[in-house]
Each structure stands twice: as C-alpha cells, then as structure tokens.
Image 1 (spheres, helix red, strand yellow):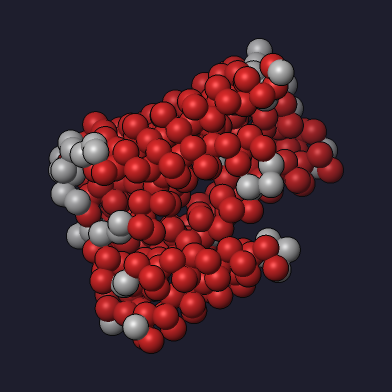
Image 2 (tube, helix red, strand yellow):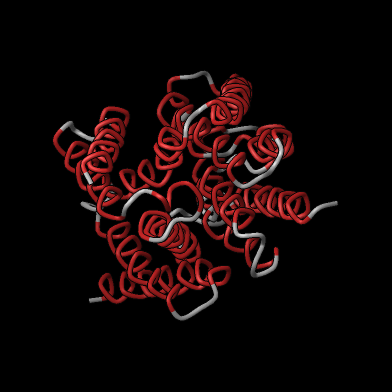
Length: 212
Length: 106
C-alpha cells in the first residue's frame, strides 16, 4: 500500500498540484484508484470539466458500497450510529485486514479495532504520499517515469491476479476493451463511459450466464 | 477554490456517501444482490479501463517511455505475479526493472 501512495505523491507533483492537495486527497477520498483518476484529470488541465473527472473517480471507487455492505455485519455494532466514526476508513486495505482478522476479535472490541487500524493506515498513507511528492522533486526524469509507472502496473497486476474468477474476469476484460472508447470520445468522458459500459455489459453477461 | 480543490471536495463527499449507503443498506442487501454485483463490475471495469489507458496512452513523464518498454514491464510483472504465487511487491519490482531495462536498450 505504501508504495502506491508514494507513487501517488509523485503523480501529484507531476500534475502541478500542491503537497496539501496530496494529503487531503489521501485522507478525504482514501481510495487510490479514484485519487489517480483525479490526478490524471488535473494533469490534462481538467480538459473535460471537473464533473466528468469526479464521476469517473466515484465510479472507479464504487467498490466502497459493496465493501461497506459486507463489512457492516462483521463489525457487529449494536447500533448503526456507533459505526459512524468507522465509515471514513472503509477502503481496500482496512477492509481486507478486517475481513481476515475481525472474526477472531471479541465483538464489542471490533469497531475500535477497525478505527485503530484505519487511523494507522491513514497516517502511513499520508506520510508516504508526502514523501513521494518530495522525493519526486529530487529525482531525474528516468527515475520519475519509473515511479509514475508504479500505480498503473500495480493495479494491472491486481486485476490480472483476479482473472481466474469469472465475475472479475468479465469486468476486467470488458473494461479494458471499452477503454478503446477513448479513441472516439473526449478523454475526460471516455473513462467514465468505458467503466459504465464495460461494467454493465460484464454484469449483464454474468446474469445471462447464471440464468442458463 | 480552484478546480482541483472543488473536484477533490466533491469526490470525497461522494465517496463518503457510497460508504454510508453501504452501511445503511447492509442487512437489507446481501452481497449477491444485483445492485452490489453491478457496482462491483462497474468499479472493476473502470479500473481496467484506467489501467489500460495509463499504460497504452499515458500523459506526462511516463509518455516519454516507449510503448514497448511499458508493455514489457506489464508482461514481466504479470508473469512474475503468476510465477510467485501472486506476491505483489516482488512482481511489481520485476515489472519496473523490465521497463527500465527495455527502455535503456531501445
């Protein structure tokens, strides 16, 4: 996780944004794919308007919804309201750790465990992205390009590792194919359109497959 | 407020909304619900499209790296990932090294 935030800091610098923006993006959005979509849009000067960039960033982070749905019963708080302080920390790393570790934790201690883990990974993420921002300033062009390649490559590997399960395989292949919409649509809208079209086609293919 | 700040604020709010909606819907929805399956598929497809564009048609300093070097990094990274039982960090390092080496050779 720290490597992706380090590379994010470098990408923020590359896009001409401030270190404060990098830190607030880490803590406010706390979902790397969405953060990357925004930085990419900033690097192209918000060519398609901020609306398309924001919707692309939200679409790429739409997994927060299913994550929250599956995490809530595991946290087993007696009242929903007790979960509110935990909500901002629902993100890939704390979610994966919680789904693994929480079943072995006493029920009353689970929300505090999750908040503690979430806060720690927030601090690490913020520190890593600030380091990335400042380190990128000291690097030559070649090393900077390698650092900027970290996030695309890391997420490509994560997606590739998912290819042996049918539902992610459909979504990944449809999304990658739909990326060719970038040749006919303006760059700003292409990502959102590719995600919605590819995801919906994959979803419908899956429904058809299950229905047979 | 600059465009970047506004985009950040809107995205942060929307992401918080997604998380809150998930917490509130939990119990009423199972993780096999079609809406959940759709949200997951859209998120994965958007990420796949983003990664494809970032590798094939990047902007900035990465665009100076030849396409062949980027694709070599991707291929070696995936091969290493599969060979090393999906351990991400070594696979990432192998992919980056391949990109740097191919770039230097070209």
